[in-house]
Image (tube, rainbow, N blue to C red; front, side):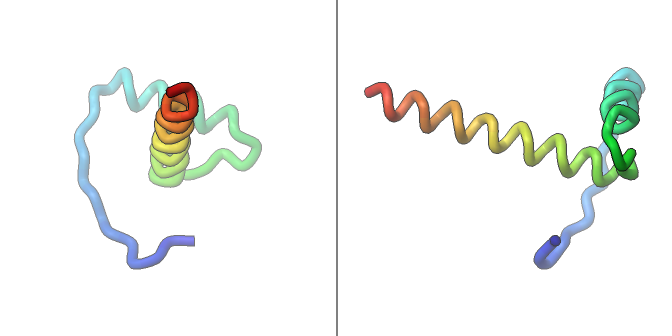
Length: 59
């Protein structure tokens, strides 16, 4: 799954941890928090790329 993984240490507000935990609790496999953060990050980056592609197509 991961090529050459890197470790990150981040601090986030408690309210964000609550939101992450709520999201992961709604997943069928209830991923560990670190996996949930990876998935959410990938989803956000994919969404951003898709939005950029739509804007480029509209030009």
